[in-house]
Image (cartoon, rainbow, N blue to C red; front, top):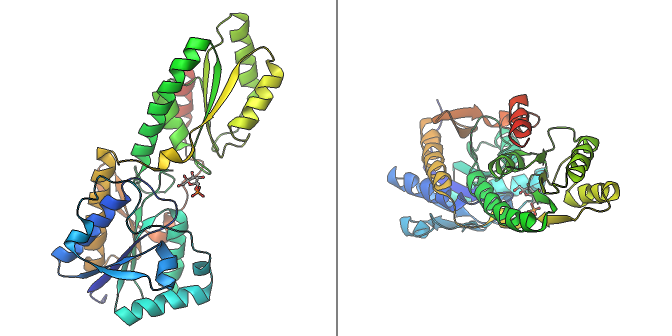
Length: 327
Ligand code: F6P
């Protein structure tokens, strides 16, 4: 029989993503609804180690559903990777009587939670908050939809000037290990080439198609590249293309951290609210050390250790669509 939880902590960890605030709000208000005490842990695991923890009330999360960033702040804690750090974190939880944790973050944060729950008697539930969408067991992660829409808006603008000048543009989007932002935003903006870490980039193929365009005097071409592509980022791609097409005007635009900020989209607010609600329900009902995802519009619960990077899972069909629609 699992112990009943009565005081829970909530934190955001790793890279922030739009919608994290909506998830915090859902956790706090669902916890209070069930009569639990809810504690906000600042700066993820680092705040846990440093005892930077405060009690939250319903109004602590008023007027935040529409805000990007995270009111609890976030960090990547090196100290938590060591046993001593995790022991300090546990002692701080014990001292306050916190007996359940909701972690909103990416796969690195979940790996920390797995270790923590194995070593100490603290049930953990994970919610996927990352713009990269690289977590197994969920169709969406909080922030992905907003990030992709930010990228689409920016790329559309670049396309206007690209077209006016007959140029080649290489646009770099985020995704150190995953190409979902590149794939989704690239398809949505009609990119001719999309370069992602999950697929080997054939630069010679791109050069050949651009030379053909040059021959036909149709030198407009949009390339969307994920920062973690195996060939390198936008600057590396530009260098090689320029060497092979000396007459072409090739420009680079790196979208960077604007993709991580801004007001969350409706979808991100909605999934954050649902995941936050179900994370607390899971802790109460004894579904511990799991990750709460949404698949086919239904809640999906998986052991936390399975929610690792969903690398290399981009289907051939997606790549075929890119090729056919851009031809
Ligand atoms: O949030 C994930 C991510 O956006 C990656 O795609 C990117 O490489 C990384 O964060 C950069 O994060 P930071 O600048 O915070 O180190």
